[in-house]
Length: 224
Image (cartoon, rainbow, N blue to C red; front, side):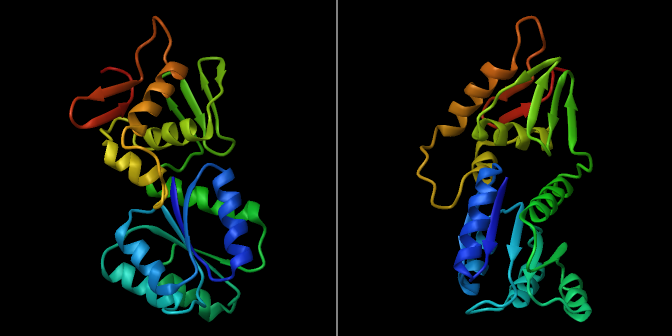
């Protein structure tokens, strides 16, 4: 899934981006409030990690403008401001979660994953489609009793399709959620990775789980 980090403290910004990318997320980063608002308005992020004390435009103003414009990305406020009043203000303005610095990265990661599941109305960390099982927490995948070994990009693609199981997902939507703003990937990379994923999850004699909808995109789910 695709995240935006708006955090001006460079060491924290870099460590968060590194950890979240290693966890399989596509991550855009900025340390400026105005640029952060521009990113958030122009892209469909699954989660925005937002500091409050920013140069340019403060985090609360960014949050207020996002909600005023109807942007529905989940927002996790990340700040050193830890008073009850600060938390209430952030949540009342439309934040979905609030984490005070200093924090453990593992807790932030768990909160981000929970927000991603909430985005797709998926409360359980386990998804099952026929005999395909996906553990969103450990990022492990099985077809029947066989565990499948996917690359981080293949897993990210499968997870996104699984979050929207039974729905047609366009190539543009896949690109928007799995690739960073400055990605140099070629235009056919989505089709290439769909092919890689099919070779790993499909089995002879079993229903195909990834279906192509000509001219529209892909569906994860067995033939009706």
